[in-house]
Picture 1: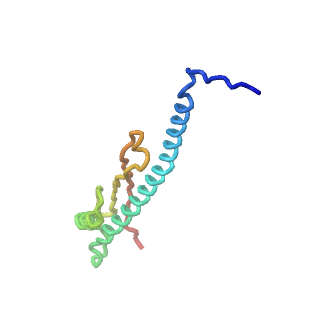
Picture 2: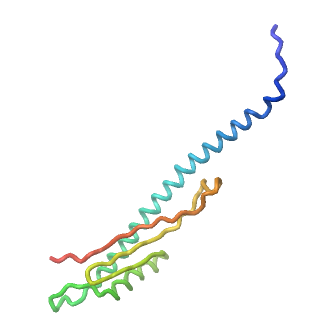
Length: 134
């Protein structure tokens, strides 16, 4: 029969530290997968809202009966801003007589990465709607 020797006192806790390190690595990897996916989705959503707000502003065409097709910059900016406000979004609106540019910023909270100190992130997207002559 083989006699089992007593474990070395110095080896206690080594496996615990290794498992703890492994678990932390898995949490970080899962956090990157989940939270980066959520950040990409927030970026796409910001782009959709920016595009819709720019389109809403680009509908403020003026001087059509006079043979001109121009945007009213004041009304176009107000219309795009109204879209952002109606959807509770933060962003910037710029308009001139030919185009409306909207930038939307969406704050996305992290689900798992906050465990390692990475907090909220901001996804932003800019879209422009231009008048097209027919």
